[in-house]
Image (cartoon, rainbow, N blue to C red; front, side, top):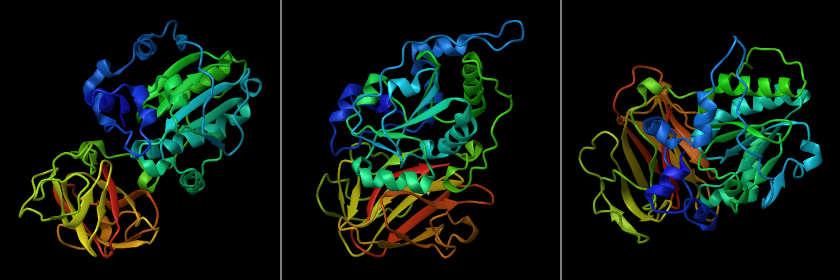
Length: 381
């Protein structure tokens, strides 16, 4: 997700992200980075990418500046804030992420693998959890996400975006590679290029005097963390709250912060979506006010995910998914049974569709069987 692109589009200074206590502080899908090409990269990243190999040896990575201190976190999880002394002489990877971000979730298996493989050789991984949605500011939610995701390295809860601003970061996920002298030597924004990132870690460890074997870690990512099918991906990240919403097709037009009865059109064009039932559309989410309601999306991708939450009092919300009007069967996501049934029990990303056959335009429908369902964001893979 590109927080910087969203901030620019809204005319916001990225520093203002820290002041949004309830609103989404988010951005746009990582694929926009590829569309923007070099213009979306910082000058220092361009420098890192333009270094060439000489004499058949790996190029020396440029020095991009001293890494900022890890000050200002709301709280530290899985341990205390790493002291300057504990980081002295270490190679450090700083990983900015947030737990409902699909791009971050698909990158995490690699970060965990690097921490396990190279930790004994001097790599220190520091996660910086910078929230996109209000519920990601809840430390208990973050703590549970760390447990569910199997993250055991230290993580800063950066609710005030203090570390984010110190690094002048604009992306989820973002990786900053720091050498044993405290210099940022490489940075990578978004998904992909995992082998390149691992080679950077190896090179910085060798520079610190550690003997490191070549090769890359085996990462058997599964479920929601499996890599996207880029060839089949023709649907983009879609926000449901009015601050970022697009392609809303229901009638009447979206009413801000007002309970409204919505109806769906007879047909949806590709990447259009809509609501049915009585919903209140807020800045970053829509809340179901009636006892039942639906969300429908015409999409083209292997995977479909939806960031959801239960009712405000924590009561679970039952749902039923249909694909082209039928039970998903083998196209079920990891959070859905073959008959399409499931339950929203917590605020997180839910994988609702994973197609196994031919990928084509499909109509996704989720019917909530209880009031209070909260929906934030569609993502695809």
